[in-house]
Amino acid sequence: GRQNLHAYWAATGRPAHEADLEEALDVAALGGAIDRPVRSYSHGMRQRLGIAQAMLGRPAVLILDEPANGLDPEGIRWIRDVLTHLARQGRTVLVSSHQLSEMALMAEDLVVIGQGRLIEQSTVGDFVDRYADRWVRVQSPNAAALVAPITAAGGVVASVTTSTLDVRGLDCV
Image 1 (tube, helix red, strand yellow):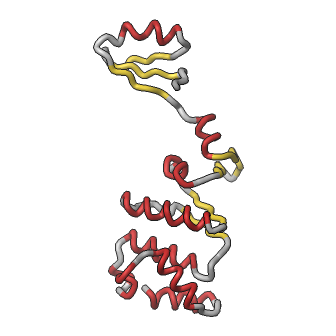
Image 2 (spheres, one colour; image 1 turned 90 degrees about the vertical axis):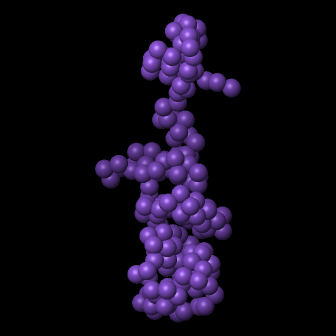
Image 3 (cartoon, one colour; image 1 turned 45 degrees about the vertical axis):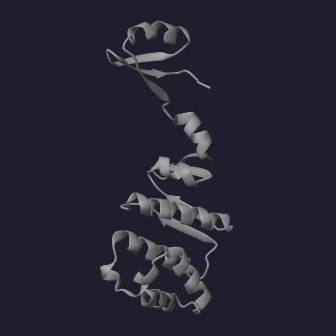
């Protein structure tokens, strides 16, 4: 908790500024748990403590590797809100993640790296527009009658069941 943050700070050789510690604790939102031993923390609380440690000294750049890994939905929302807040303060926040849907909710720019090479660099929206498989599942008691008009309009139809179709290739407004 607080002692761990003080110990971490001392180990970095940085002068301790209580205002930085308070900001880190406020961001971590650990509440009364901050004075409990870390071994009693849940995984989510340990993630929050790690974020607090990363915040010490008010860094201009934060680099986090899979910060939402293993968190419950509430913890994922918390991490998203905190990282977005920090970016709005003017900090650079780099997050590595395999969860594109989560990144789309918070990231402005996307860098895709594979086997040590830059594959793509764009906005999240541009990336999704280029690579996402967009489709609509249509259910109808007379699904077979929909195939011809959909195909005539340029759509590609795949039958899922006799009453269900997956339709790709059409833009809807």
